[in-house]
Each structure stands twice: as C-alpha cells, then as structure tokens.
Length: 401
Ligand code: PLP
Image (tube, helix red, strand yellow):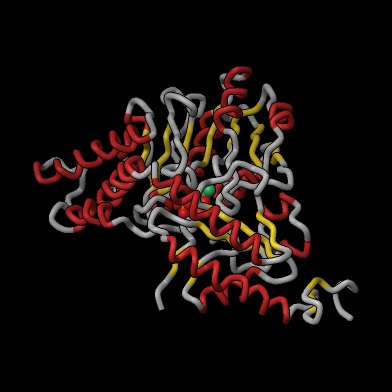
C-alpha cells in the first residue's frame, strides 16, 4: 500500500538536494570545524556560507545574527531564558494560550520562578484580539513571545502589526516569534515586514531538512544570554561542536524554499480542494480556524460525535498519515490546549484531525483522502453513542438512551 503523507506540520521528508548537500560532511569532510589544520577549513567555511544563505533567505542582513541550534525547541528556550537572563530586573512576559509547548511550557516554567506571564486568549476562529494585546503590554514587560503560525490549525497571527505596535510604544521590549511553521511557507522579511522582530525561531525538519537542526535569528543589539555554556562556538552564543552536515542541509532547505515559494499557491489550491470536498460530503464537519488567515498547507477539521484517534487509526489502515493535533500532544486523551482555547464545542473537541500538505503532495493523494474520509466518518458515527444510525443524525436524547 502506498503511503500518503499529509502530516508535514509534524515533520517533512528530507529533500533529495538537501541530502546531497549533507553527505560530504558525513563522509570525507568529517573534520571538526574548530580545528586548526587545513583539512577542517571546508567545514568551517561551510557553516559561514550556510549562515549567509539562511540570512539571505530571511533578508536578515548581517549573517552573524543567525545562530544555529539543534531544533526550534532549543531556539525558543534560548530566546526566552536568554532574554530573561540578560534583563533580570524585568519580570513580565506576554504570550498566547495557543503556543507550541516549546514556548508555552517555558513560559509556565518562568511563571513558577516568579515571572508574571499574560497568556492571551483567542476567539473561536483562533484569532487574537489586538486591543487586548495592546492592553497587555506594560512598562515592566520584558518580552513578547507570539508564534507566527499555529502548528495545529495553521492560523497566522499578524506579527508585522503586533511587533510594530510594541516597538512604536516600547522599543526596549524584546519581541520574539516562533516561526517554525511559517518559514518557507509565508514571506518573511526581517528587513521589511518583520523588521520589528528581535528574535525568530525555526526548525529544519518542518522544511525538508533533517530533524536535529534549527536556527534562531537574534537581531544585533538584542540582549540575550546563551543557554548552552562551555564552548566558544557560534561566536560564544551556543557551546557545542556544530552539526556541519545538518547546518549545510538547513541552508540548502532555505534555498529550496525560496525557489519553491510560488508552489505554496498550488499547495493552497490542493488544501482548498480537500477542505471544500470534505465539508460538502461530510455532515456535522467544521473547519477549525476557518474564520482566520491560515497557512496554505494546513487543514484542521472537527468531525462532531466521533474521536479523532479513531479517524486516524482508520486513515492509517488506508496508508494515510495525518494527525489529531500536535505530534507532542497526540497520544494523550486530553483535547489539545489549542482546541480548548478556541472553545471548540464538546461534541467536536475530540474529533479534530489535521491534514498538513507539502509541495510534494499530489492531486491524486488528495483525491484518495476525499474518497475514503466520508466512509470512515460514517462508519465511526454508526458506532457512536451520540449518533442515531437509523436516522443518520445526532441523537436527540443526548448521551445514551
Ligand atoms: N514550534 C512550533 C510552532 C512547532 O510546530 C514545533 C514542532 O512541532 C516546534 C516549535 C518544535 O520544533 P522542534 O521539533 O524543531 O523542536
């Protein structure tokens, strides 16, 4: 059975060009980039070239502002803990209730160690209220950390506006965004629309580079202390021998994403085709985040009266790999914190499924999902205590007869 992979917000396949760019550093050019002999020169030069490529892809200006890390979680931890360590006097942080745990749990940890954290709510579409956001900013605010695109729903926050609003009134407040799901999918220009962003995190494995490499943009002058101490690497900002092969892979992935940015329109058209067909064919189906701007590749749907886990299991039987939320929260019976924050109704809270496409997703694959999904939902509803299988609609008498 052919695998249909539509879980690209969890991780992506490594692009063949990325793999090729990495191989030399896993074979003949294995040298430590910090060594003094000539043989290690290629490794050291490759890292600096990669820094230039990544910086150029984000229009970041001086490449020294790019710090290579092991993943977006590390980038987020570095940004939040690093800014806090550099400014010990300020104790207020603004974030949202729908961040990835790599920000949310760090903020909760900060709250346990005496910081005051404002977790901004979202509405039922997943949108932030800008007036509420502005009200949350205070003279003693240290850091604003707000994701660009949500990994579960694909909802995009207006980082351009939010960062401008902060900087126009309080230029000293540090603005961080977790752009792990948007780099390569949406236009990000750190000299243009994102010029007020001080710190930006992202990860290789969401953009066809391997797992185990990420980056953090740190705008020059932003106070941020290192998370990993004990080595001079990365200009003293992150200790640890650099992962040369993966850094070369990340740079190639950034280059490819630039080249393929036009493909996002095709991806959006495929996503819309999937969305429209499922909404038309399946009754009591809702699109989570439908009323908000969304990533071109993400579709999160809630099928009322059934369990997302059941849908995923059946999809898997057809070779279709999708997800019921973030990879980190799936597997737990708790509905995702994102669905809870959006106030998704109880009957749909557990029935959410995320399809996340990539530039490698084909029309045939989407048609295959459109073919099987309605039958899966119908079958599961027949077995649901909330569903009247005779009349093919929700039971009117509530939970059980
Ligand atoms: N931030 C967001 C928005 C994500 O979607 C993810 C992964 O799903 C992460 C951070 C963590 O990324 P990594 O696996 O590279 O640590």
